[in-house]
Amino acid sequence: MSAADIEQTQTEVAGPKIELSAEREAEYERITRNLAEMTSGEILRKVLSEDRTVKCYWGESASWVIRT
Image (cartoon, rainbow, N blue to C red; front, side):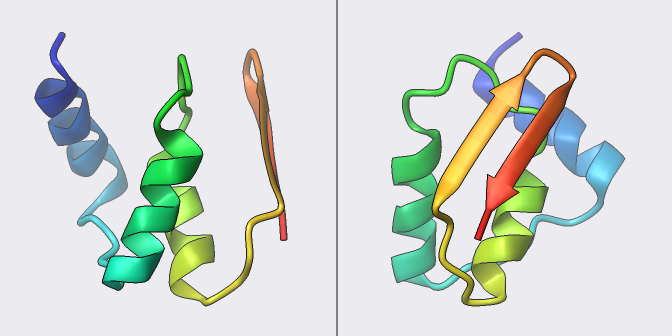
């Protein structure tokens, strides 16, 4: 499954993608670029769209934590 297929599937399940400013989009890319797996990018996008600073993104099997 390609990255585009995964993003399309996530969009269908989670709804429309949350739009971010260019600065916040760059921050989202820095946080997610080396992750082997990610549960939901929309949760992280929601935190960033609220102008909150992400201090930690931690994922373990079926659970995850976002520290702000």
